[in-house]
Length: 180
Image 1 (cartoon, rainbow, N blue to C red):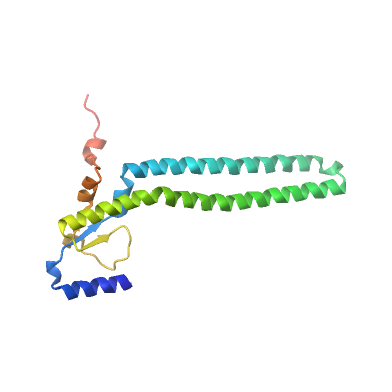
Image 2: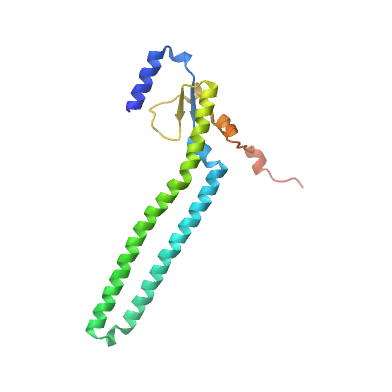
């Protein structure tokens, strides 16, 4: 909110609003078409799969020990029965702890992989904005503006994509069936 007030004050202090150049961009849309994003997603998926496999191993170990306990508990001495119950509880606790740690590791890995991609996109946005004389670029992927007349601001996504070397195929060409 403070940034919005500073932005409005800066616009009013500089002169007439019509003399300023404003632009908009959906940053998420640009980031998701970057080749680096696809690579990061692929690496993140592999990382998540490894974590999932480790969690499944712990679950299988628990299930095997539980089945063994249930099968043999009638013939177990009280002390062994108590020891096996504690072992099962510890496995459940280990699984829960691993699940929490895995979730934190996944989020950390996601940030680590996506940060350079987002920085590259932001650098391209900054470059395009400076080159084309835009004083403000609104990110339309985050809903922080109460109102934005999109017809009054230029969408710089095509310029940023060009600066990033991203070429898009027209939707009609991508979905058209080959002629026979």
